[in-house]
Image 1 (cartoon, rainbow, N blue to C red):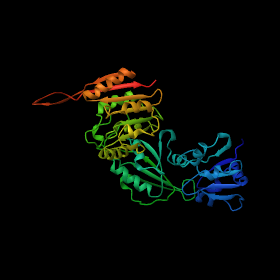
Image 2 (cartoon, helix red, strand yellow):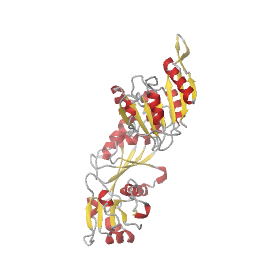
Image 3 (tube, rainbow, N blue to C red):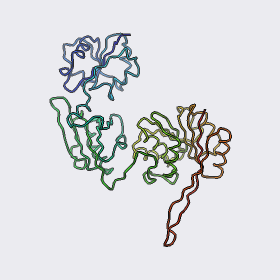
Length: 400
């Protein structure tokens, strides 16, 4: 089927900045969809009907006009955090033609002389500030797509709270237009409460020496988490995540999640990793909500409930970790049934009863058992000695 839908990327210079193909598509269209700002940039001579996006946003009106010449207006590159990517998930490639303009991030990189491949991009449109946390590292360069004119001030305050007040912020308003403006200041010196709503923020991160340094590898310090003692400790956590082996796009169930440390570090392994934390204790649920934001994975899903009942209806996982409740009736069986073929199940036990459960499970389903016995140096009078921590039994098994 020939392409009936054309998505036109438009810069802040409007219709005058479009190429011949984009102009021709708009001239030939029977209807043009877009935001009110974009539609207002079109010349009055175009004969096509103009339809602003519905509120809430919905592409159904566009799809309902299949096989008629339709144009959609988008900002910059429609395939970069844009409506083009949304439409492409619902249409085969041969029905869709995309005519991109330079994205706001491309323009920002050009203004600053930054190599795009060396900088991260984070969208705060409909996303919390916590989405920035994963990218806060010394000397990191980050482009931030603002939600509105209040975003720069919010980002500046957020950076200061996390020990990144010395970070350079460059706010670029109306890139590519006659009213383009750049504002360059440190986060801890930011004084503008409201900028133009159309803006991109560039960050050159500088960390205060006293600010915590959060590595992307498994095994964050225990004090990085808010908890009540129900925490898979740092060294055991690193070993456990090594067995769980997170891979891009995979989903983890963290059953009996405690403060959420396993699910959080699973998601920190890659931007596309997903996790669901299942926790029955209301106080620990609040810990999870705090920790997921503080450690940069606000999309960690929290299910308030107790396994196995709370597992019903959840999407099938690629891996499951059971950190609490292995002795509860039906938990292991329910997890095993729900696990995808070829998926990994890892469970830790600290009690004799829990260990006996894992030994019996291994006898029935296979896998490996590992005893983790660690000791820490602690004072003994005027000397130091090794104080062993409680040993952990780790079950690691794969579903055929």
